[in-house]
Image (cartoon, rainbow, N blue to C red):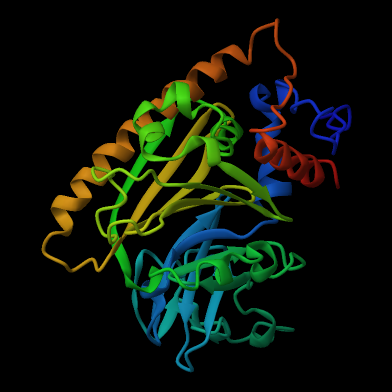
Length: 362
């Protein structure tokens, strides 16, 4: 597929968006899986699932089955969940165990990936167990989250996150426990959804409820190497959804971080909401929402969360309507590329630059 006919223009005032075919051509998804999702850090689980020696959980990235383990020495690992004998599964689900065993022929691996035993394998020549351990992948953590990267040459997770850990160090993230997960399936290309997230330009028209909560005039987007940050002060409104845990007059703002290509971190004074955007097809997207709530064991959390969720669900459904409408119209013969608002769409422009960078290199 020809990708080099789009030239990214770094000057926002002169730039055009990526072409419509990047959103609607079925051939794009396989290329994106290899060159973007297969080369970037993907959030796959929570540290609490591999906190203790022997803990493990399974997951997948671009249809690659993986298993994350905590070995007996306390070290974190991630491997392809593929037995080196004849490609059976060595783990299912999550739990705690001393070894990983293939469900096909019982080849057994230590939690550090080394091959431990191969039943009835006597007489096999030129075979060394040391050569047949599970294939590793990069794994790292930040805060309560576990990330993996299929590319052994990819830069460290810390490089992708940049200053986010420092900027959120004073926020009470350590007091926010997992509360709820909700999945939305959307009839649009995954990039349409990310485009929509990366600008507040549509808020006055598309999100009247959110518009009342934030000071839109001060809404700004800052871009960095692999991520961007949107921030806006929360209005001085006693009925504000996001001011209920703050002292009167205390400053508050909503922070929206996006990490290339598909992770959003929405940080409010009393809760953290993450979104993971996964393509299900070239015109279908899974959006995973997870909420982490301040002091999750408080008795009043359920009532407070119900109010937050109702608000979030309204905003999400407004975004779904927008994205699905855009996806249909990207097929119009009348549309190829668009232009950017210099004031409001630098985040989308930044995303398109990273897309071009990753997709246009072999």
